[in-house]
Image (cartoon, rainbow, N blue to C red):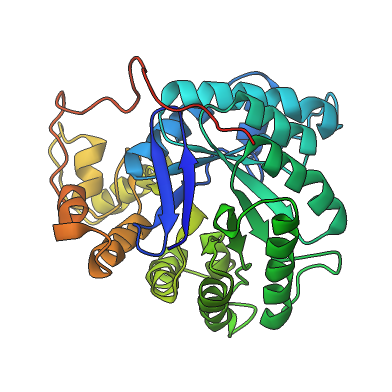
Length: 355
């Protein structure tokens, strides 16, 4: 049975057809996050620290690390991204003990992340483009790590699932030429937005089954792509993920955290309540108010997608006796009883294995 092993210094995450779904937290990525990009350029890592701890607390088993900031002071990522990647990797693995996914389009940043990472990280990513294959596969072999293989090539992203399967097969075969086994290839068949292509979900499910049955590889995806541009994206994501798991998908790059309710949303709701003539206790705090009126929480917490994944793990017998499901649904600890989100000292563990 296919097993893809990803390690930190002290923990191991396993992707496999009979393993719990592997959640790769996507939040440490400045793409589309202007505030985070500005912080990273300024050397401020406070948001990275919060995102790392919150994602692990919400159930992420691997954390994706992307340092792709285009500096205003220096727009050349080949110069700026490698040292930033190294810094972020070192910072994150000092806070949490889950394995990492080193994510970059810059080869120098990929290698910097691999050099800094403890254990056996996942590399993200290689495509079917010839130049990319020649740059990334030697790194995969040198550091003996698994890699995400994205099903596009020099012709771009095809809407034809047959073409995407052919690209995935090409990458697996080229990897074999480098001595990289199929169990270290995690294929991303590329999820198209369902709003733009009505067959997007069906395509992915069919592709995942073929990738499992014909190539014997584990799979992943950018889970939120399926709902791009649509209302109630969480509702679509919540349905998509268990269906993808049922088809054989073994991981997803996603946000496991339900973000805190914004203060502006709380204030607007309070104004609405006051306008309706309702009088609330003067000592009611914002968290109690949010819970009472169904706004969510003022604190980061596991998102609805995590609930769907844990339920699907239970239903597919990848959560024996429902232990994780029961723990997930326990009442949160009272103030003062919370467990620490980070970790103290570290000891033991395995080092990265080199070829």
